[in-house]
Image 1 (cartoon, one colour):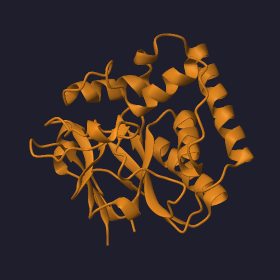
Image 2: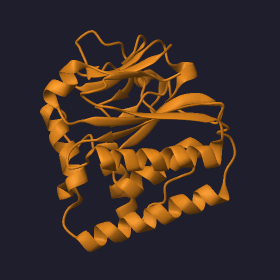
Image 3: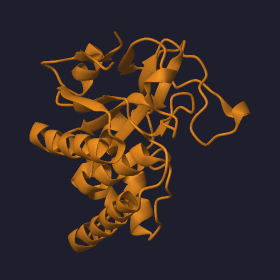
Length: 240
């Protein structure tokens, strides 16, 4: 049984981190959905409206600033390597529409914008063994990141936070960029999605985003879903 765990060293550095998880199987991820496209457009517009009303630099928004601080803590430059939520919000504020990728990616982008938290996912059929959120060592295999050329593989930097299995990193710099190897595709039938929270995002906010995510997977992709939250009190759980 495949496990997802958070290493103790992560809690030493980030004691209040929480990761909500939707483990799913038997989903249908192929084909476009007009309803899901409308949902994503609506969340883009609403996020832009809310941020516009709040005013101030996006980097100073509490849900972005917490990730910037985390990135600095493990040696990454947020300006050069923005968290997934900062990247999404900057694109939306520039008026860019997020492209259709597949149902799971579209719906997790919608939830990310709705709750202003990083959300991502992996295809379990491409995962090798258990998955762990941990600090990278100086012995990590090279990894090709999503959207990069085949000859661009390089290892994570020692000390950065990664999701990794036996074959290497699934996502670099916590939620900056995913590996091409385990990306969600239209052929995906089983996998897991994560909702990540650092203060001021507390457990109820993670649980609210997680509930929305699971409901959208059920409505637009079918299959079977299980949800749980990993934190200091529960550091691992099965995802298949």
